[in-house]
Length: 106
Image (cartoon, rainbow, N blue to C red; front, side, top):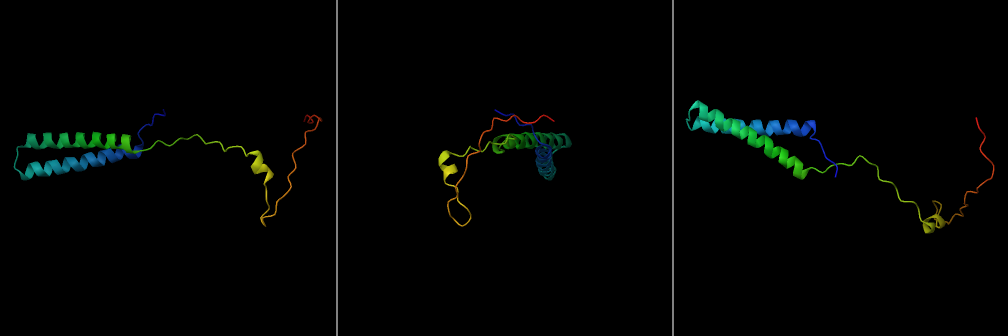
């Protein structure tokens, strides 16, 4: 299995989501008139929770992209025999002939 490293985009998106949750938690704590330490604690917990939940989301949802190029299958004998030109007429194909001559050295 190919292990995918987090991209720069996913790391920054985690920070954005964590920051947004942090601001919401801070605002909710301030409006409910909690003391300063509780506001910061809730904001920090919301940031860490949002950061890790976004990383887990990327792990589960993103699909790794294989960088290997898939090889095209070799044409079958039937496909090689049924070659047609653009007008739809069958075209006779000739097999490349093997020669006994050795290639010239440069």
